[in-house]
Image (cartoon, rainbow, N blue to C red; front, side, top):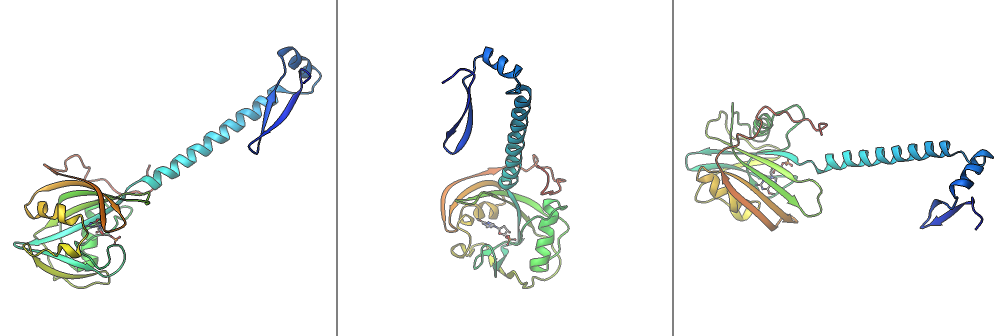
Length: 234
Ligand code: 6OG
């Protein structure tokens, strides 16, 4: 191959420039105006910038996908009874659960919990006590669920059926675990004993727990109670 020749080489469908030029021949090629390295450098620079921007964009999208979904769960307790609701539609349909749902942009987590309790069950509370944080991973789903569990024994109003939930009081010795999410069997007894807890459950489908961790904690002081959910924040 003659020195100074710059040939185009095709590899795996991508065209790739391979330079076989020695520096002498490059100089003479540049002098003859055959090639303009400074121009080439500019192209190279632009290409690198373009790739960096693409990668950065991909990273941002990935970060927003990977961010946990923030949810709430409220368990109203009245001495020896707990108020549960039969989920009539959507995620967890056919299972007894507390009341809750997604935190909306502009709300603190507790505000979201108080709103959901009222929307789903007609009960009003001024504040709630946080008793748990549960993280759920579902195989094949990129986003984890981060469920903040709250309780209160003080409320106003009468439980009322909504589009989402049909409420029912259960005695603490007769919690219907078989028609609840499988993780509830693990952490609900801690809640009933007045303990605070933090847990992680990895699900295969909606019925099988593959891995789990669960521990009692002293408090949730590390959480910023004034944090306002903003889905656009990285
Ligand atoms: P919507 O998507 O309907 O809110 N939730 C769970 N609750 C229990 N006990 N176990 C789980 O194990 C749960 N995963 C989600 C959070 C869904 C509601 O269901 C709760 C919310 O209160 C996997 O808006």
